[in-house]
Image (cartoon, rainbow, N blue to C red; front, side):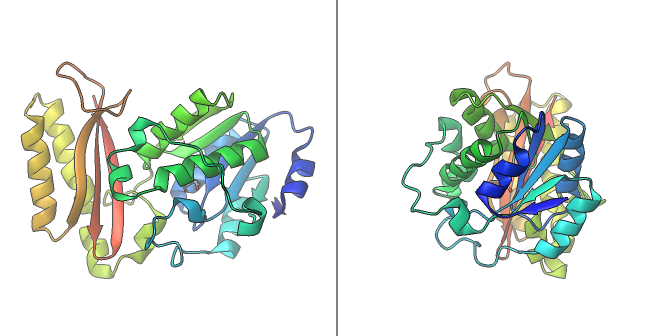
Amino acid sequence: MDVITTVAALRERLRGEPSVALVPTMGNLHAGHLSLVEIARGRAGCVVATIFVNRLQFEPGGDFDRYPRTMERDRELLAKAGCHVLFAPDEREVYPEPQEIRVTPPKSAAQLCGDYRPGHFEGVVTVVSKLFNLVRPQVAVFGSKDYQQLHVIRTLERQLNFGIEIVAGTTVRDPDGLAMSSRNGYLSPQDRARAPGLNQVLRQVKQGIEAGDRNYASLLRVARDTLDAAGWRVDYVELRGRATLEAPTANERELVVLGAAWLGKTRLIDNLEIN
Ligand code: PAF
């Protein structure tokens, strides 16, 4: 695997590559990320993973400084997973001058996580646009745990005509149901034991709706109350239509339930599609 830190070397390395698949990450890799590399390997001859902790997408007072940086381990994991190129630039390489030009995220970003993380999706779509332009892949693979991010990036790709196929990887979970996340490492042992609770309440909503319960408001209230009672601080538990990420209409059948909640200083998110 080639490890590249500059834009010039990246362009040089990728010149003439007939098919490139991009896996953008912020590092601290786990099995979820590696499953995205696996998908990418099936889609292109050259897999480029990026590791860049993007300051622009952290809200003021967020966890940018304490976000785990584990480059040596990440590099080994990617090499073992069959990644061909690791692009791991520093901040000055990506933002050599103040990033005055920003991409405005779509309406679907102004809700859910967007309500609680001001500027987050602007930072995401701006850096993802830059990565698309730097790597110029045919395919880019993103995890489904960040469901709203995936939706917003699909809109970005479509509305700015990048001509890149966006592929979603399914969420990889620990055996107890907790969605893998770099932020799980922040959890104390006690909070780690409680953390599957988020997935459990989302499963209850999903099961209720799939069994025919149409009282969405009540199902969501029970989910939030259950988390509250178990000591979580709930940002949201909401139901959305999958196509638009808007509140579902009465007859909409393709739904997704999404949740974000805090255990101590750690914010976890998860979602489940409902059929
Ligand atoms: O999902 C992430 O890790 C980040 O938001 C991404 C897509 C790599 C952009 O920084």
